[in-house]
Length: 125
View 1 (cartoon, one colour):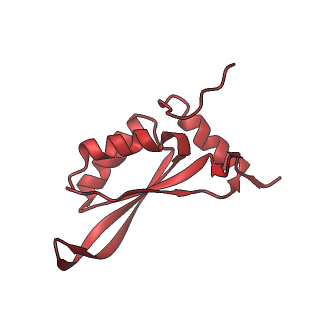
View 2 (cartoon, rainbow, N blue to C red):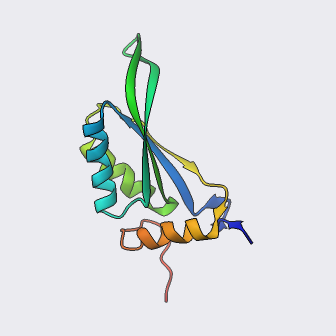
View 3 (cartoon, rainbow, N blue to C red):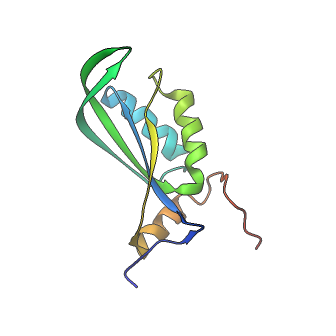
């Protein structure tokens, strides 16, 4: 099979965690925190323009969008890590399930994040 995603109870095992920040320095700091803790396998940084309402006022700002590929059971630890170091008062930290992916890529995510603390179900070996 060319693509798969282990799942149980309708939840997938993998996700992309999304966050934004103001500049490259902040983005690199956030990436380092996640990768050094082995919470994500790959993080892409994209230049974007965000339009939003903050404190009753419409705003437009250039930002960096971070796409963090990881295991779904690591979301809580990623959220806690980002919340602790993120420069924004109310950072965007959301998770999008990965519905399917190549077996090799998903195995690589498992391999890279193998040493990370997990809040998910523990398997007895």
